[in-house]
Amino acid sequence: MNAPERSAVHRADAAFQEMHGRAPSGVWSAPGRVNLIGEHTDYNDGFVLPFALPHRTAVAASARDDGLLVATTLGDDGKAQHATPIAVSALEPGAVQGWAAYPSGVAWALREQGVHGGADLVIAGDVPAGAGLSSSHALECAVALALLGLAGRAPDGAAGSPALSEIARWVQRSENDFVGAPTGLLDQTASLCCTEAHALFLDVRSGKSEQVLFDAAANGLRVLVIDTRASHSHTDGGYGARRSGCERAAELLGVPALRDVAVAELPEVLPRLPEELRPLVRHVVTEDDRVLRAVDHLRSGRMAEIGPLLTASHTSLRDDYRVSVRELDVAVESALAAGALGARMIGGGFGGSAIALVPEDALTAVEEAVVAGFALESLGTPRLFTAVPSAGAGRDK
Ligand code: GLA
Image (cartoon, rainbow, N blue to C red; front, side, top):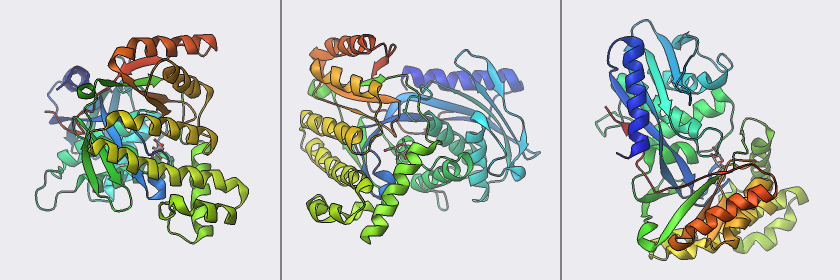
C-alpha cells in the first residue's frame, strides 16, 4: 500500500471510530484516474486507456438497522461535514444536493439491485477535487463497494456476486440519473478495474478489457500530471452538448454509434453531415484509432512512441472537439517545448488536468517550463506530480 492510500484509509477509519465510538465493519477505497488516451470515446462505444492514480477516496462503514444513510466527509482541513441523514427508501433524483448526492446516488442505484440497508459512512480522500482526476467516481466506487460489502454482496467472484463491470454500470446510473451528469463508463471502470503497473485497455462496447503493462520508469520516462486548477464540471451544458451531437451524428449516418465509423471512411462520411457535427465525428473516429495505435506501441514495448499520439489527441480535442481551455493548452505547449515526448488534456475538459510523457532527465525542465508558462499568462500556479499506475478499488480492512 502506498502512502496516500494508507492515509485516506487510516483517516476514514480513525474518524469513524472517533465519531461512532466503535470500529467500522470495514473500510473500502477507490482511486482517481488519469486517462492515457481515448477521450470522449466512451459514450461513443469506443476505446479508452486509463490507469489508476495512487490517490484514493476511502469509506469506513457499518450497517444501520433503521434504514438511514448517514454520511460524513472529512474536508481537506480535517473538519467533518455531515450530510442530512436520509432514509434509503426515500432517495430519489433531486432529493439530495451537494457532495452528499454522490453517496446518496449510489445507494439509490444499489436499491434497485436489492441492496436496501442503511449505513453509517465516514469518507476521507486525497484525490484532488475538481481537477478532472475523477474524485467523484473514486467516492462513488468506494461507496458502492462499501454498501455491497455490508450487504454481503462483495465482488469476490463467489456465485451470485456482481462483476466489477456490472458495478461500474450501477455507478454510471447513479451519476447519470441521480447526480445529473451524462457521463460515460470510463471513470468508474478505471477506478474499479485498473491494476498496479498497468493501463486498462477497455472496449466500451463489448466490455472486454486487457491490462497493458505500463512501466514508465523502466523506459526512463515519467508521466507528469498537471492539475491546472481551472475547475470544471460535467453537469453544465458543454459535456452534454458534445454527447448529444455525437448521438445525432450517429443517427444521421445510420450507425449504432460513432465507433462504427472507420478513419478511412471519414472523407466520404463527413460531407453527409451538417457542418457543426463534422469536427465532433472527426475527433471521435481519429481518437479511437489513436487508442488502438497506442496500445500496439505499448504491447510491443515502444512506450516513447505514444508521445506523438498523445499530442495529436490534444490537438483534436482543442480544435475539433473544442473542450480545451487556455490553461490546458499552455500546460501542453510548455511541456512539449521543454522536452516532453507528448502531452494532452485528460478527462472531459473545460478545465481540469493535462498529462505529459517526459524523459526522466527532462522532468525538472518540463516542470519549470509549465510553471513559467502559467506565470507568463497570469494563469496561477498549477499543481504538478508524477503518477504511476496504481491499484483499483477494493476492501482495505
Ligand atoms: C469525463 C466523463 C467520462 C468521459 C470523459 C471524456 O471524465 O466522466 O465518462 O466521457 O469525460 O473522455
